[in-house]
Length: 458
Length: 137
Image (tube, rainbow over all chains, first blue to last red; front, side, top):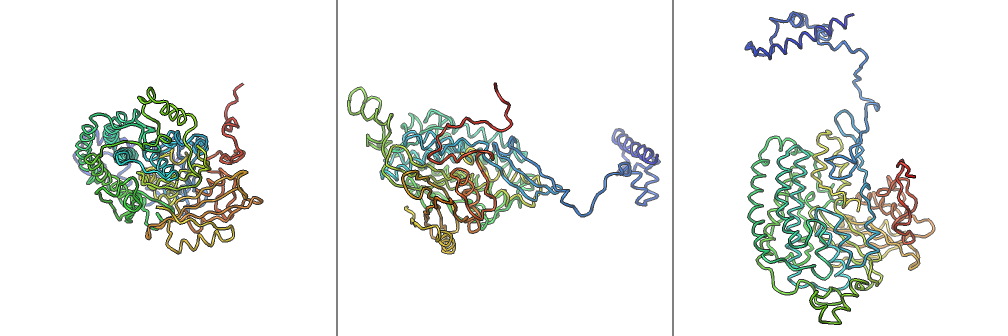
Protein backbone atom coordinates (compact mmCIF):
# COMPACT_ATOMS: atom_id res chain seq x y z
CA UNK A 1 0.00 0.00 0.00
CA UNK A 2 2.77 2.35 0.94
CA UNK A 3 4.71 1.41 -2.08
CA UNK A 4 1.77 2.28 -4.30
CA UNK A 5 1.68 5.82 -2.88
CA UNK A 6 5.36 6.39 -3.28
CA UNK A 7 5.27 5.16 -6.80
CA UNK A 8 2.62 7.78 -7.53
CA UNK A 9 4.70 10.47 -5.88
CA UNK A 10 7.68 9.52 -7.88
CA UNK A 11 5.72 9.60 -11.06
CA UNK A 12 4.27 13.03 -10.26
CA UNK A 13 7.71 14.38 -9.60
CA UNK A 14 8.93 13.03 -12.89
CA UNK A 15 5.94 14.48 -14.70
CA UNK A 16 6.62 17.87 -13.17
CA UNK A 17 10.19 17.79 -14.31
CA UNK A 18 8.93 17.07 -17.79
CA UNK A 19 6.55 19.98 -17.55
CA UNK A 20 9.34 22.15 -16.29
CA UNK A 21 11.42 21.43 -19.36
CA UNK A 22 8.44 21.63 -21.67
CA UNK A 23 7.39 25.11 -20.57
CA UNK A 24 11.01 26.24 -20.43
CA UNK A 25 10.43 27.88 -17.09
CA UNK A 26 12.95 30.50 -16.12
CA UNK A 27 12.68 29.92 -12.40
CA UNK A 28 16.20 28.55 -12.46
CA UNK A 29 17.75 25.48 -10.93
CA UNK A 30 15.64 22.51 -9.94
CA UNK A 31 13.25 24.46 -7.73
CA UNK A 32 9.93 22.96 -8.67
CA UNK A 33 8.34 23.37 -5.28
CA UNK A 34 5.73 25.88 -6.38
CA UNK A 35 3.93 23.33 -8.52
CA UNK A 36 4.64 20.08 -6.76
CA UNK A 37 3.28 19.27 -3.33
CA UNK A 38 5.23 16.07 -3.03
CA UNK A 39 8.61 17.61 -3.49
CA UNK A 40 7.69 20.43 -1.11
CA UNK A 41 7.18 17.82 1.56
CA UNK A 42 10.42 16.16 0.69
CA UNK A 43 12.32 19.36 1.22
CA UNK A 44 10.69 20.05 4.57
CA UNK A 45 11.15 16.61 6.09
CA UNK A 46 14.55 15.26 5.13
CA UNK A 47 14.63 12.11 7.22
CA UNK A 48 16.26 9.33 5.32
CA UNK A 49 13.20 7.11 5.29
CA UNK A 50 11.00 9.92 4.04
CA UNK A 51 13.40 10.72 1.27
CA UNK A 52 13.59 7.08 0.29
CA UNK A 53 9.85 6.80 0.13
CA UNK A 54 9.46 9.95 -1.88
CA UNK A 55 12.24 9.08 -4.28
CA UNK A 56 10.58 5.77 -4.89
CA UNK A 57 13.53 3.68 -3.80
CA UNK A 58 11.48 1.74 -1.26
CA UNK A 59 9.41 0.20 -3.97
CA UNK A 60 11.84 -2.61 -4.65
CA UNK A 61 12.42 -4.11 -1.26
CA UNK A 62 14.16 -7.32 -2.26
CA UNK A 63 17.36 -5.66 -3.47
CA UNK A 64 19.99 -5.57 -0.74
CA UNK A 65 23.27 -3.78 -1.30
CA UNK A 66 26.03 -5.52 0.57
CA UNK A 67 28.85 -3.23 1.62
CA UNK A 68 31.53 -5.87 1.20
CA UNK A 69 31.49 -7.37 -2.25
CA UNK A 70 31.63 -11.11 -1.96
CA UNK A 71 32.83 -13.57 -4.55
CA UNK A 72 29.25 -13.82 -5.76
CA UNK A 73 29.50 -10.27 -7.00
CA UNK A 74 32.26 -11.23 -9.38
CA UNK A 75 31.02 -11.87 -12.84
CA UNK A 76 32.78 -13.57 -15.71
CA UNK A 77 32.11 -11.97 -19.05
CA UNK A 78 33.14 -13.27 -22.42
CA UNK A 79 34.20 -10.66 -24.91
CA UNK A 80 34.41 -12.07 -28.38
CA UNK A 81 35.38 -14.05 -30.35
CA UNK A 82 33.01 -12.18 -32.63
CA UNK A 83 33.42 -8.61 -31.48
CA UNK A 84 34.25 -5.58 -33.59
CA UNK A 85 36.84 -4.18 -31.23
CA UNK A 86 38.86 -7.36 -30.71
CA UNK A 87 40.44 -6.93 -34.17
CA UNK A 88 39.46 -10.35 -35.41
CA UNK A 89 38.52 -13.46 -33.54
CA UNK A 90 40.17 -12.82 -30.19
CA UNK A 91 38.20 -13.94 -27.14
CA UNK A 92 38.75 -12.42 -23.72
CA UNK A 93 37.44 -13.98 -20.56
CA UNK A 94 37.21 -11.12 -18.09
CA UNK A 95 36.35 -11.38 -14.43
CA UNK A 96 34.53 -8.21 -13.46
CA UNK A 97 33.88 -6.70 -10.08
CA UNK A 98 31.36 -4.03 -10.83
CA UNK A 99 32.99 -1.93 -13.52
CA UNK A 100 36.50 -3.07 -12.74
CA UNK A 101 38.33 -5.85 -14.54
CA UNK A 102 40.00 -8.04 -11.93
CA UNK A 103 41.38 -10.82 -14.10
CA UNK A 104 41.49 -11.41 -17.81
CA UNK A 105 42.51 -14.33 -19.93
CA UNK A 106 42.97 -14.08 -23.68
CA UNK A 107 41.78 -17.17 -25.50
CA UNK A 108 43.17 -17.59 -29.00
CA UNK A 109 43.22 -20.15 -31.74
CA UNK A 110 40.00 -19.33 -33.55
CA UNK A 111 41.94 -18.47 -36.70
CA UNK A 112 44.47 -21.27 -36.45
CA UNK A 113 45.00 -22.79 -39.87
CA UNK A 114 48.19 -24.75 -39.32
CA UNK A 115 50.45 -22.52 -41.38
CA UNK A 116 53.63 -23.88 -39.83
CA UNK A 117 52.59 -27.38 -40.85
CA UNK A 118 51.73 -26.13 -44.32
CA UNK A 119 55.13 -24.45 -44.47
CA UNK A 120 56.79 -27.87 -44.19
CA UNK A 121 54.99 -29.03 -47.32
CA UNK A 122 55.76 -26.04 -49.55
CA UNK A 123 59.20 -25.57 -51.04
CA UNK A 124 61.27 -22.47 -50.47
CA UNK A 125 60.06 -20.90 -53.67
CA UNK A 126 56.44 -21.26 -52.58
CA UNK A 127 57.14 -20.34 -48.96
CA UNK A 128 56.35 -16.61 -49.12
CA UNK A 129 52.85 -17.44 -50.42
CA UNK A 130 52.23 -19.07 -47.09
CA UNK A 131 53.96 -16.63 -44.74
CA UNK A 132 52.45 -13.56 -46.38
CA UNK A 133 49.04 -14.64 -45.12
CA UNK A 134 50.08 -14.66 -41.47
CA UNK A 135 50.15 -10.98 -40.58
CA UNK A 136 47.73 -9.73 -43.18
CA UNK A 137 48.31 -6.07 -42.39
CA UNK A 138 52.06 -6.25 -42.97
CA UNK A 139 52.42 -9.06 -45.51
CA UNK A 140 55.65 -7.76 -47.04
CA UNK A 141 57.46 -8.08 -43.72
CA UNK A 142 56.50 -11.72 -43.47
CA UNK A 143 57.79 -12.35 -46.98
CA UNK A 144 60.97 -10.45 -46.20
CA UNK A 145 61.76 -12.38 -43.04
CA UNK A 146 61.19 -15.71 -44.75
CA UNK A 147 63.36 -14.67 -47.70
CA UNK A 148 66.13 -13.35 -45.46
CA UNK A 149 66.21 -16.61 -43.49
CA UNK A 150 66.36 -18.68 -46.66
CA UNK A 151 69.11 -16.47 -48.09
CA UNK A 152 71.06 -16.79 -44.87
CA UNK A 153 70.85 -20.58 -45.10
CA UNK A 154 71.97 -20.58 -48.75
CA UNK A 155 74.53 -17.86 -48.10
CA UNK A 156 73.66 -15.47 -50.90
CA UNK A 157 73.46 -11.71 -50.99
CA UNK A 158 70.77 -10.06 -53.10
CA UNK A 159 71.65 -7.17 -55.47
CA UNK A 160 71.53 -3.56 -54.30
CA UNK A 161 68.43 -2.76 -56.28
CA UNK A 162 66.55 -5.68 -54.73
CA UNK A 163 67.56 -4.49 -51.27
CA UNK A 164 66.41 -0.95 -51.97
CA UNK A 165 63.10 -2.13 -53.41
CA UNK A 166 62.61 -4.28 -50.32
CA UNK A 167 63.24 -1.32 -48.03
CA UNK A 168 60.96 0.93 -50.08
CA UNK A 169 58.12 -1.57 -50.09
CA UNK A 170 58.38 -2.62 -46.45
CA UNK A 171 58.53 0.95 -45.19
CA UNK A 172 55.46 1.80 -47.27
CA UNK A 173 53.88 -1.27 -45.73
CA UNK A 174 54.78 0.00 -42.28
CA UNK A 175 52.94 3.24 -43.04
CA UNK A 176 49.85 1.41 -44.28
CA UNK A 177 49.89 -0.93 -41.28
CA UNK A 178 50.21 1.93 -38.81
CA UNK A 179 47.42 3.78 -40.60
CA UNK A 180 45.13 0.80 -40.01
CA UNK A 181 46.25 0.69 -36.38
CA UNK A 182 45.40 4.38 -35.97
CA UNK A 183 42.10 3.91 -37.80
CA UNK A 184 40.85 0.89 -35.88
CA UNK A 185 42.20 2.33 -32.64
CA UNK A 186 40.18 5.47 -33.26
CA UNK A 187 37.12 3.46 -34.12
CA UNK A 188 37.33 1.45 -30.89
CA UNK A 189 37.49 4.60 -28.81
CA UNK A 190 34.70 6.31 -30.72
CA UNK A 191 36.58 8.63 -33.05
CA UNK A 192 34.83 7.38 -36.14
CA UNK A 193 36.29 10.07 -38.39
CA UNK A 194 39.70 8.63 -37.64
CA UNK A 195 38.61 5.29 -39.03
CA UNK A 196 37.48 6.83 -42.30
CA UNK A 197 40.66 8.93 -42.52
CA UNK A 198 43.04 6.08 -41.83
CA UNK A 199 41.53 3.69 -44.32
CA UNK A 200 41.30 6.45 -46.93
CA UNK A 201 45.02 7.22 -46.82
CA UNK A 202 45.92 3.54 -46.71
CA UNK A 203 44.14 3.15 -50.02
CA UNK A 204 46.81 5.31 -51.69
CA UNK A 205 49.52 2.89 -50.61
CA UNK A 206 47.49 -0.18 -51.43
CA UNK A 207 46.94 1.17 -54.93
CA UNK A 208 50.69 1.46 -55.34
CA UNK A 209 51.12 -2.08 -54.05
CA UNK A 210 48.51 -3.32 -56.48
CA UNK A 211 50.33 -1.61 -59.34
CA UNK A 212 53.68 -3.11 -58.32
CA UNK A 213 52.81 -6.57 -57.07
CA UNK A 214 49.43 -7.24 -58.66
CA UNK A 215 47.63 -7.62 -55.35
CA UNK A 216 46.49 -5.32 -52.58
CA UNK A 217 47.30 -7.83 -49.86
CA UNK A 218 49.12 -11.20 -49.70
CA UNK A 219 51.52 -10.03 -52.39
CA UNK A 220 54.09 -12.85 -52.62
CA UNK A 221 56.36 -10.11 -53.97
CA UNK A 222 59.53 -10.48 -51.92
CA UNK A 223 60.96 -13.94 -52.62
CA UNK A 224 64.19 -15.71 -51.80
CA UNK A 225 66.76 -14.23 -54.15
CA UNK A 226 65.20 -10.82 -54.67
CA UNK A 227 61.76 -9.59 -55.59
CA UNK A 228 59.23 -11.02 -58.02
CA UNK A 229 59.13 -8.13 -60.48
CA UNK A 230 60.73 -4.78 -61.08
CA UNK A 231 58.96 -1.58 -60.08
CA UNK A 232 56.41 -0.44 -62.69
CA UNK A 233 57.02 2.45 -65.08
CA UNK A 234 56.40 5.82 -63.47
CA UNK A 235 56.58 4.49 -59.94
CA UNK A 236 58.33 7.66 -58.78
CA UNK A 237 55.19 9.64 -59.54
CA UNK A 238 53.08 7.44 -57.28
CA UNK A 239 55.62 7.48 -54.46
CA UNK A 240 55.91 11.27 -54.72
CA UNK A 241 52.14 11.50 -54.45
CA UNK A 242 52.23 9.37 -51.30
CA UNK A 243 55.07 11.47 -49.87
CA UNK A 244 53.06 14.62 -50.54
CA UNK A 245 49.63 13.51 -49.32
CA UNK A 246 50.40 11.49 -46.18
CA UNK A 247 52.13 14.30 -44.19
CA UNK A 248 49.24 16.67 -44.94
CA UNK A 249 46.75 14.09 -43.72
CA UNK A 250 48.82 13.33 -40.63
CA UNK A 251 48.59 17.04 -39.84
CA UNK A 252 44.81 16.67 -40.07
CA UNK A 253 44.90 13.80 -37.57
CA UNK A 254 46.97 15.88 -35.19
CA UNK A 255 44.60 18.83 -35.54
CA UNK A 256 41.74 16.53 -34.73
CA UNK A 257 43.20 14.42 -31.93
CA UNK A 258 46.43 15.75 -30.46
CA UNK A 259 44.84 18.44 -28.28
CA UNK A 260 41.43 16.86 -28.15
CA UNK A 261 40.36 16.69 -24.48
CA UNK A 262 38.16 13.63 -25.02
CA UNK A 263 40.92 11.76 -26.81
CA UNK A 264 43.46 12.63 -24.14
CA UNK A 265 41.03 11.84 -21.34
CA UNK A 266 40.35 8.41 -22.75
CA UNK A 267 43.97 7.52 -23.48
CA UNK A 268 46.32 9.24 -21.07
CA UNK A 269 47.34 7.25 -17.99
CA UNK A 270 45.44 4.27 -19.31
CA UNK A 271 46.95 0.83 -19.80
CA UNK A 272 50.44 1.63 -18.62
CA UNK A 273 53.25 -0.76 -19.53
CA UNK A 274 56.64 -0.20 -17.94
CA UNK A 275 59.93 -1.14 -19.58
CA UNK A 276 60.44 -3.97 -17.08
CA UNK A 277 57.05 -5.43 -17.96
CA UNK A 278 57.90 -5.18 -21.64
CA UNK A 279 61.12 -7.13 -21.06
CA UNK A 280 59.38 -9.73 -18.93
CA UNK A 281 56.67 -10.37 -21.49
CA UNK A 282 58.92 -10.06 -24.53
CA UNK A 283 57.13 -7.02 -25.90
CA UNK A 284 58.93 -5.24 -28.72
CA UNK A 285 58.12 -2.64 -31.31
CA UNK A 286 56.12 0.55 -30.74
CA UNK A 287 54.88 -0.63 -27.33
CA UNK A 288 58.44 -0.96 -26.02
CA UNK A 289 59.46 2.37 -27.53
CA UNK A 290 56.41 4.04 -25.96
CA UNK A 291 57.60 2.86 -22.56
CA UNK A 292 60.80 4.87 -22.81
CA UNK A 293 63.28 2.28 -24.11
CA UNK A 294 65.07 2.90 -27.38
CA UNK A 295 65.18 -0.42 -29.21
CA UNK A 296 64.65 -0.83 -32.90
CA UNK A 297 66.10 -3.70 -34.90
CA UNK A 298 66.47 -1.38 -37.89
CA UNK A 299 69.16 0.49 -35.94
CA UNK A 300 70.63 -2.20 -33.69
CA UNK A 301 70.58 -5.24 -35.96
CA UNK A 302 70.02 -3.80 -39.44
CA UNK A 303 68.87 -5.83 -42.41
CA UNK A 304 68.77 -5.19 -46.17
CA UNK A 305 71.10 -2.20 -45.87
CA UNK A 306 68.73 -0.09 -43.76
CA UNK A 307 71.74 1.17 -41.79
CA UNK A 308 72.54 3.46 -44.75
CA UNK A 309 69.37 5.48 -44.33
CA UNK A 310 69.00 8.54 -42.18
CA UNK A 311 66.10 8.31 -39.75
CA UNK A 312 65.29 8.67 -36.07
CA UNK A 313 63.61 6.34 -33.60
CA UNK A 314 60.77 8.07 -31.78
CA UNK A 315 60.77 7.21 -28.07
CA UNK A 316 58.21 8.33 -25.51
CA UNK A 317 58.44 7.66 -21.82
CA UNK A 318 54.82 7.59 -20.60
CA UNK A 319 54.06 4.00 -21.57
CA UNK A 320 50.31 4.58 -21.73
CA UNK A 321 47.87 4.11 -24.59
CA UNK A 322 48.34 7.71 -25.68
CA UNK A 323 52.11 7.23 -25.98
CA UNK A 324 51.64 4.07 -28.02
CA UNK A 325 49.31 5.93 -30.35
CA UNK A 326 51.73 8.85 -30.62
CA UNK A 327 54.75 6.63 -31.35
CA UNK A 328 52.92 5.11 -34.29
CA UNK A 329 52.16 8.55 -35.73
CA UNK A 330 55.78 9.65 -35.33
CA UNK A 331 57.03 6.41 -36.90
CA UNK A 332 55.01 7.14 -40.01
CA UNK A 333 57.00 10.37 -40.42
CA UNK A 334 60.28 8.45 -40.06
CA UNK A 335 59.17 5.81 -42.55
CA UNK A 336 58.32 8.57 -45.02
CA UNK A 337 61.91 9.78 -44.70
CA UNK A 338 63.23 6.32 -45.51
CA UNK A 339 60.87 5.97 -48.47
CA UNK A 340 62.05 9.31 -49.85
CA UNK A 341 65.73 8.35 -49.53
CA UNK A 342 65.08 4.93 -51.08
CA UNK A 343 63.34 6.60 -54.01
CA UNK A 344 66.21 9.00 -54.58
CA UNK A 345 69.02 6.46 -54.32
CA UNK A 346 67.30 3.60 -56.17
CA UNK A 347 70.26 1.96 -57.94
CA UNK A 348 70.12 0.47 -61.40
CA UNK A 349 70.75 -3.20 -61.97
CA UNK A 350 69.08 -6.56 -61.51
CA UNK A 351 66.24 -6.91 -59.05
CA UNK A 352 67.03 -10.54 -58.23
CA UNK A 353 70.15 -12.68 -58.01
CA UNK A 354 71.41 -13.90 -61.34
CA UNK A 355 71.85 -17.45 -60.06
CA UNK A 356 69.52 -19.43 -62.28
CA UNK A 357 69.35 -22.23 -59.74
CA UNK A 358 67.54 -19.93 -57.32
CA UNK A 359 65.51 -17.44 -59.30
CA UNK A 360 63.59 -18.35 -62.46
CA UNK A 361 64.83 -16.92 -65.77
CA UNK A 362 62.88 -14.15 -67.53
CA UNK A 363 59.91 -15.31 -69.59
CA UNK A 364 61.53 -14.22 -72.87
CA UNK A 365 64.55 -16.45 -72.37
CA UNK A 366 62.41 -19.59 -72.35
CA UNK A 367 61.82 -19.36 -76.11
CA UNK A 368 65.53 -19.00 -76.87
CA UNK A 369 67.44 -21.12 -74.41
CA UNK A 370 67.17 -24.79 -73.56
CA UNK A 371 69.01 -24.22 -70.27
CA UNK A 372 66.60 -21.48 -69.26
CA UNK A 373 63.70 -23.84 -69.88
CA UNK A 374 65.33 -26.56 -67.77
CA UNK A 375 66.02 -24.13 -64.90
CA UNK A 376 62.50 -22.80 -65.10
CA UNK A 377 61.08 -26.31 -65.01
CA UNK A 378 63.28 -27.38 -62.10
CA UNK A 379 62.44 -24.33 -59.99
CA UNK A 380 58.72 -24.55 -60.55
CA UNK A 381 58.47 -28.30 -59.95
CA UNK A 382 61.10 -29.30 -57.45
CA UNK A 383 62.31 -25.95 -56.16
CA UNK A 384 65.89 -25.24 -55.18
CA UNK A 385 67.79 -27.15 -52.53
CA UNK A 386 69.00 -25.44 -49.40
CA UNK A 387 72.03 -26.70 -47.45
CA UNK A 388 71.53 -28.36 -44.09
CA UNK A 389 71.40 -26.13 -41.06
CA UNK A 390 69.17 -23.81 -39.14
CA UNK A 391 68.85 -20.05 -38.95
CA UNK A 392 66.88 -17.48 -36.99
CA UNK A 393 66.48 -14.03 -38.52
CA UNK A 394 64.53 -11.17 -36.98
CA UNK A 395 63.36 -7.91 -38.49
CA UNK A 396 61.40 -4.96 -37.15
CA UNK A 397 57.79 -5.35 -38.23
CA UNK A 398 55.19 -2.64 -37.43
CA UNK A 399 54.25 -4.63 -34.32
CA UNK A 400 57.68 -5.61 -33.07
CA UNK A 401 60.28 -8.27 -33.62
CA UNK A 402 59.21 -10.61 -36.38
CA UNK A 403 61.42 -13.67 -36.42
CA UNK A 404 61.64 -16.71 -38.64
CA UNK A 405 63.34 -19.95 -37.65
CA UNK A 406 63.96 -22.45 -40.41
CA UNK A 407 65.55 -25.87 -40.06
CA UNK A 408 66.74 -27.33 -43.35
CA UNK A 409 67.59 -30.98 -43.94
CA UNK A 410 69.14 -30.33 -47.34
CA UNK A 411 65.99 -30.82 -49.39
CA UNK A 412 63.93 -28.24 -51.22
CA UNK A 413 61.38 -27.92 -48.42
CA UNK A 414 61.95 -26.61 -44.90
CA UNK A 415 62.15 -29.40 -42.35
CA UNK A 416 60.66 -27.01 -39.80
CA UNK A 417 59.44 -23.48 -40.35
CA UNK A 418 58.51 -21.41 -37.34
CA UNK A 419 57.49 -17.77 -37.35
CA UNK A 420 57.80 -15.71 -34.20
CA UNK A 421 54.87 -13.37 -34.58
CA UNK A 422 55.02 -10.18 -32.53
CA UNK A 423 51.25 -10.12 -31.98
CA UNK A 424 51.32 -13.56 -30.34
CA UNK A 425 53.87 -12.38 -27.81
CA UNK A 426 52.33 -8.94 -27.29
CA UNK A 427 48.98 -10.48 -26.41
CA UNK A 428 50.54 -11.92 -23.26
CA UNK A 429 50.72 -8.39 -21.90
CA UNK A 430 46.97 -7.94 -22.13
CA UNK A 431 46.29 -9.23 -18.57
CA UNK A 432 49.02 -6.90 -17.25
CA UNK A 433 47.49 -3.89 -18.98
CA UNK A 434 43.85 -4.63 -18.24
CA UNK A 435 43.92 -5.89 -14.65
CA UNK A 436 42.37 -3.50 -12.12
CA UNK A 437 41.29 -1.01 -14.73
CA UNK A 438 37.74 -0.06 -15.76
CA UNK A 439 36.04 -2.16 -18.40
CA UNK A 440 35.75 0.95 -20.57
CA UNK A 441 39.55 1.07 -20.88
CA UNK A 442 39.78 -2.54 -22.00
CA UNK A 443 38.96 -1.73 -25.58
CA UNK A 444 41.51 1.08 -25.67
CA UNK A 445 44.13 -1.28 -24.28
CA UNK A 446 43.49 -3.95 -26.92
CA UNK A 447 43.58 -1.38 -29.70
CA UNK A 448 46.87 0.09 -28.48
CA UNK A 449 48.63 -3.30 -28.66
CA UNK A 450 47.42 -3.60 -32.26
CA UNK A 451 47.15 -7.40 -32.40
CA UNK A 452 46.57 -9.03 -35.76
CA UNK A 453 44.89 -12.35 -35.17
CA UNK A 454 46.28 -13.88 -38.33
CA UNK A 455 49.72 -13.38 -36.82
CA UNK A 456 48.63 -14.66 -33.40
CA UNK A 457 47.05 -17.91 -34.53
CA UNK A 458 48.98 -18.62 -37.73
CA UNK B 1 74.60 -11.31 -37.10
CA UNK B 2 74.98 -14.85 -35.91
CA UNK B 3 73.79 -15.73 -32.42
CA UNK B 4 75.89 -17.69 -30.00
CA UNK B 5 74.57 -21.27 -30.04
CA UNK B 6 74.76 -23.31 -26.86
CA UNK B 7 73.80 -26.97 -26.87
CA UNK B 8 73.04 -28.15 -23.38
CA UNK B 9 71.47 -31.12 -21.66
CA UNK B 10 68.24 -31.37 -19.76
CA UNK B 11 69.78 -31.13 -16.29
CA UNK B 12 71.67 -27.92 -16.94
CA UNK B 13 68.97 -26.30 -19.05
CA UNK B 14 67.17 -24.41 -16.31
CA UNK B 15 70.42 -23.26 -14.70
CA UNK B 16 71.74 -22.05 -18.03
CA UNK B 17 68.58 -20.04 -18.66
CA UNK B 18 68.77 -18.51 -15.18
CA UNK B 19 72.43 -17.59 -15.55
CA UNK B 20 71.73 -16.13 -19.00
CA UNK B 21 69.13 -13.86 -17.50
CA UNK B 22 71.57 -12.61 -14.90
CA UNK B 23 74.15 -12.13 -17.69
CA UNK B 24 71.94 -9.46 -19.25
CA UNK B 25 69.71 -11.43 -21.61
CA UNK B 26 66.59 -9.69 -20.40
CA UNK B 27 64.23 -10.92 -23.10
CA UNK B 28 63.19 -14.35 -24.26
CA UNK B 29 61.94 -13.79 -27.79
CA UNK B 30 61.16 -17.28 -29.02
CA UNK B 31 60.78 -20.85 -27.87
CA UNK B 32 59.99 -23.63 -30.29
CA UNK B 33 60.61 -27.29 -30.91
CA UNK B 34 61.77 -29.52 -33.75
CA UNK B 35 60.65 -33.10 -34.24
CA UNK B 36 63.60 -35.20 -35.50
CA UNK B 37 61.42 -38.24 -36.12
CA UNK B 38 63.61 -41.20 -37.18
CA UNK B 39 66.50 -38.83 -37.85
CA UNK B 40 67.93 -38.21 -34.42
CA UNK B 41 67.79 -39.70 -30.96
CA UNK B 42 66.25 -38.37 -28.74
CA UNK B 43 63.43 -37.18 -30.90
CA UNK B 44 62.42 -33.69 -29.74
CA UNK B 45 64.65 -30.65 -29.57
CA UNK B 46 63.71 -27.39 -27.86
CA UNK B 47 65.18 -24.17 -29.24
CA UNK B 48 65.12 -21.00 -27.14
CA UNK B 49 66.11 -17.61 -28.54
CA UNK B 50 67.31 -15.04 -26.03
CA UNK B 51 68.00 -11.38 -26.70
CA UNK B 52 70.10 -8.90 -24.80
CA UNK B 53 69.20 -5.35 -25.70
CA UNK B 54 71.98 -3.87 -23.57
CA UNK B 55 74.81 -5.84 -25.23
CA UNK B 56 72.90 -6.15 -28.53
CA UNK B 57 73.55 -9.88 -28.86
CA UNK B 58 71.44 -12.97 -29.30
CA UNK B 59 71.84 -16.41 -27.82
CA UNK B 60 70.31 -19.70 -28.92
CA UNK B 61 69.89 -22.53 -26.44
CA UNK B 62 69.24 -26.00 -27.80
CA UNK B 63 68.25 -28.93 -25.62
CA UNK B 64 66.97 -32.42 -26.36
CA UNK B 65 64.04 -33.87 -24.44
CA UNK B 66 64.03 -37.46 -23.19
CA UNK B 67 61.83 -39.75 -25.21
CA UNK B 68 60.53 -41.62 -22.16
CA UNK B 69 58.67 -38.89 -20.32
CA UNK B 70 58.83 -35.95 -22.77
CA UNK B 71 59.19 -33.59 -19.84
CA UNK B 72 61.28 -30.45 -19.54
CA UNK B 73 61.32 -27.83 -16.79
CA UNK B 74 59.32 -24.72 -17.55
CA UNK B 75 61.15 -21.39 -17.68
CA UNK B 76 58.00 -19.34 -17.15
CA UNK B 77 59.19 -18.27 -13.70
CA UNK B 78 62.41 -16.87 -15.22
CA UNK B 79 60.90 -15.39 -18.36
CA UNK B 80 57.12 -14.84 -18.12
CA UNK B 81 57.03 -14.46 -21.90
CA UNK B 82 57.67 -18.21 -22.21
CA UNK B 83 54.11 -18.87 -21.06
CA UNK B 84 52.38 -18.80 -24.46
CA UNK B 85 55.32 -20.39 -26.26
CA UNK B 86 55.46 -23.37 -23.93
CA UNK B 87 51.73 -23.82 -24.27
CA UNK B 88 52.14 -23.73 -28.04
CA UNK B 89 54.89 -26.36 -27.97
CA UNK B 90 52.76 -28.53 -25.68
CA UNK B 91 49.82 -28.08 -28.04
CA UNK B 92 51.76 -28.84 -31.20
CA UNK B 93 54.33 -31.43 -30.02
CA UNK B 94 52.95 -32.86 -26.77
CA UNK B 95 55.99 -31.92 -24.71
CA UNK B 96 55.17 -31.42 -21.03
CA UNK B 97 56.63 -28.41 -19.25
CA UNK B 98 56.74 -29.22 -15.56
CA UNK B 99 55.65 -26.42 -13.18
CA UNK B 100 53.99 -24.46 -15.94
CA UNK B 101 51.11 -22.42 -14.45
CA UNK B 102 48.51 -23.28 -17.08
CA UNK B 103 49.59 -26.00 -19.47
CA UNK B 104 46.58 -26.33 -21.75
CA UNK B 105 46.07 -26.33 -25.47
CA UNK B 106 46.36 -22.84 -26.88
CA UNK B 107 45.72 -22.95 -30.62
CA UNK B 108 43.91 -26.25 -31.19
CA UNK B 109 40.48 -26.99 -29.64
CA UNK B 110 40.60 -28.35 -26.08
CA UNK B 111 39.33 -31.78 -27.07
CA UNK B 112 41.74 -32.28 -29.96
CA UNK B 113 43.45 -35.65 -30.28
CA UNK B 114 47.10 -35.80 -31.31
CA UNK B 115 49.86 -33.27 -31.77
CA UNK B 116 49.77 -31.64 -35.23
CA UNK B 117 53.37 -30.57 -35.76
CA UNK B 118 54.81 -34.02 -35.10
CA UNK B 119 56.26 -35.54 -38.22
CA UNK B 120 54.11 -38.67 -38.00
CA UNK B 121 50.94 -36.60 -37.97
CA UNK B 122 49.84 -36.25 -41.57
CA UNK B 123 48.24 -32.96 -42.51
CA UNK B 124 44.66 -33.34 -43.64
CA UNK B 125 44.49 -36.82 -42.12
CA UNK B 126 41.68 -36.07 -39.70
CA UNK B 127 38.48 -34.46 -40.99
CA UNK B 128 37.74 -31.43 -38.83
CA UNK B 129 34.55 -31.78 -36.82
CA UNK B 130 33.96 -29.10 -34.23
CA UNK B 131 32.11 -30.03 -31.08
CA UNK B 132 28.37 -29.39 -31.03
CA UNK B 133 28.36 -28.84 -34.75
CA UNK B 134 25.15 -30.07 -36.38
CA UNK B 135 25.55 -33.46 -38.01
CA UNK B 136 25.17 -33.54 -41.77
CA UNK B 137 23.69 -36.79 -43.11
